[in-house]
Image (cartoon, rainbow over all chains, first blue to last red; front, side, top):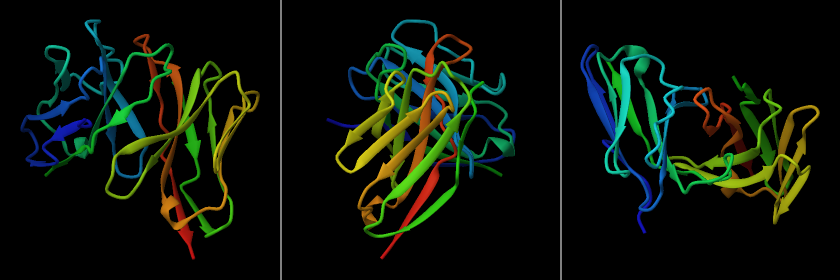
Length: 116
Length: 114
């Protein structure tokens, strides 16, 4: 079956504009994660969805960042009033539910965001 | 929060063994993952170890865990040019929101030359 897909693959925007990034997880995966990978840095956790539970938003860097997951499947990460420091690759991953982190994450190819 | 450190680069000759090291700070980490990212591709799980183990072997891969020193290593035997990639250490810890989330290091670029 298909893996995790993300769109767009590249996004260039102007400072101050809003952007939406989309993630389609693997069918049947109830867990979905968003990460940010800045140049030369590790993956920074942003937000985690698990089934119908309230999302873990503890990694979101500011209130300009938000994410939704509709119908337990597709997720959208929204960045409002983008800043140049938001430029990064945004990665989405999905997994089956696991106990205390015992679940392999399947990553999408990422969306490269460039804020001019 | 968790801090994960890896050296940024490792260069080895084809056929030699590679050892990629990782140190972390959260002693309550449950699972410790190694992910691989090949050029132009997404991250893929390579192997993992549960925190109550000290060694795991999987074909050419050997994972060693020293919980006391919070040190994790990945050894690749008979390294091939196809092993050239970025390797990420990712121990799982509880995030401040209560979920178990892998924390990724910056990754080690493994360069294999003939």
